[in-house]
Image 1 (cartoon, helix red, strand yellow):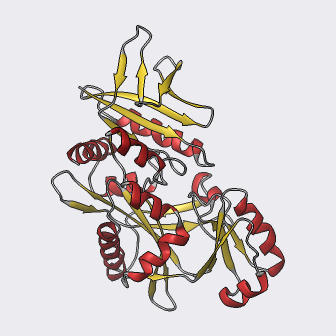
Image 2 (cartoon, rainbow, N blue to C red; image 1 turned 90 degrees about the horizontal axis):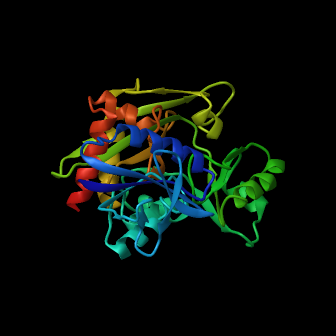
Image 3 (cartoon, rainbow, N blue to C red; image 1 turned 135 degrees about the horizontal axis):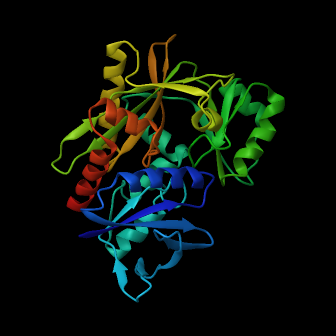
Length: 331
């Protein structure tokens, strides 16, 4: 049987979300077809989480583990489920490329590009298939003329880490007095900060996946509806139940078709692989679709968006992950 390393954890504020996603994938994988090993990546060390919850270290020289009886285990495939650094930004992809180990996500270049919103947005804009909000990218230590930023982007605006996800350290700034604190909060999470104009509208997400035989699956879209006083899909709205996620979205079929079409095109134009989710805002006043971001390793917990979209398409999580493994093994 193939040895599958289910790689979870990571170095970012999304660590616990990754662990939850990893456990869901672990429970769904067919253990009669694969030997599945839970590999946890943390700054303190990488380790194999054994079934008895004991830990055995990972040899990073060849990404192997050793059992209690001295048997060395090497892996045929890495199923990467780390959200954020180092799983979603190309670091692990480059590492596995060097070792010759296949993996389930986008490649090194695509992962690195899409993880940094300040780099990805201009590339997506250049395709001329979807609108992208105006923004400014700043690096730690760089002078930020806050007055000029507000003059250009107008209030309200969003401040977020340029790299990362789950809306960690993302702030909707409504007054000039709030801007400095929001910038500092984002810099506490990342070396670069993106300040972006606020596009009002309805938020939609769409998952895309290409199977081993080349068939591309474009999932039914989901609408995100924040509630409980939340104005956007922030961390609390995502993970503490302060949002409704409607799949398939109750929206004009023409809008749904546009979102699916753009997502399918972006998947190819950005050279994506594996399960990918694209996020958008549809501005009803302008009747325009705006690109928000790409999630090259979307959440896979029981209540995550992509598993719900797959189920709406008649695909179970077990089937989805089996297809992901087969597609990666064919690469």
